[in-house]
Length: 305
Ligand SMILES: NC(=O)c1ccc[n+]([C@@H]2O[C@H](COP(=O)([O-])OP(=O)(O)OC[C@H]3O[C@@H](n4cnc5c(N)ncnc54)[C@H](OP(=O)(O)O)[C@@H]3O)[C@@H](O)[C@H]2O)c1
Image 1 (cartoon, rainbow, N blue to C red):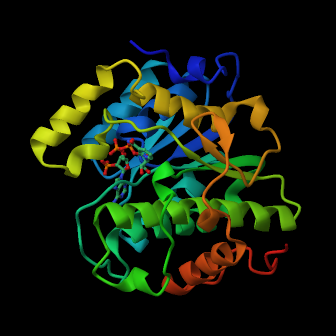
Image 2: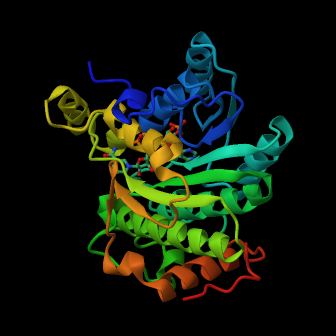
């Protein structure tokens, strides 16, 4: 049995009583384990996903450790659902101390969403972009925004004209591009927050390669089952260890004031050249607003050098 994420992240002694966390994608996998860890540390937790049964079970588990929790269902392929999630969070909480943009995955759905955007790019990038924008004015002064990206972001670039094409809406390359978008989004968000002299921080991370989460659910069943078995192999990142990386960024004092960084597990790392390209980061930010037909968030602060 691996250590609880909060011990692995060396934040066991941290008291999060009085704080509120929204962890997207916390019905399963690393989001679920991170949500439970934050609850054990005293945070009130908003659980999110699509699976209502799994959401209720996560809330029950949180309540059993004494945490206050609620589940909000939202499909990230649906813009109205994401807006409704933000609205519920605003209505049900005083403010948010922690926004963990974690929902997402590797998808086989080679379709466009109702916004005419490739499914993977929409769910993994556009939805957290929109959710973050909708919650910016609901964040506590020292809030943290943590985005689950991946080392899979390496080796690709992002053609923003192609995100509306059906080809490339699913599969591994689409996943890689969406994770590159996660790293670029987080860096641009951090810079724009800092330009406003906001003390809210934004960082992204790779949680490890974790075969035991629900990540492999879209693989053919034998492969998916086989991947889950790997969870027990020593040296393979377990779901709890992956969650520890999230909990580290969310709760460690070592992250106080740290923003605009990328972490591989619990270590700061240099993302790819494409991820660090400031022009690309800015274009992604602007294009995302265009695709969502919304005003650019944090627009009055042009991205400074
Ligand atoms: N596992 C890995 O090796 C690995 C490596 C690097 C990065 N990551 C990233 O880690 C994050 C969490 O993945 P995981 O490995 O923990 O996999 P997981 O067990 O499949 O968890 C994915 C979570 O995202 C939610 N989700 C998926 N599609 C959604 C949609 N359309 N709308 C709303 N919620 C949706 C799921 O909720 P429902 O099931 O309730 O819909 C679930 O709670 C993802 O962003 C993934 O890209 C994973």
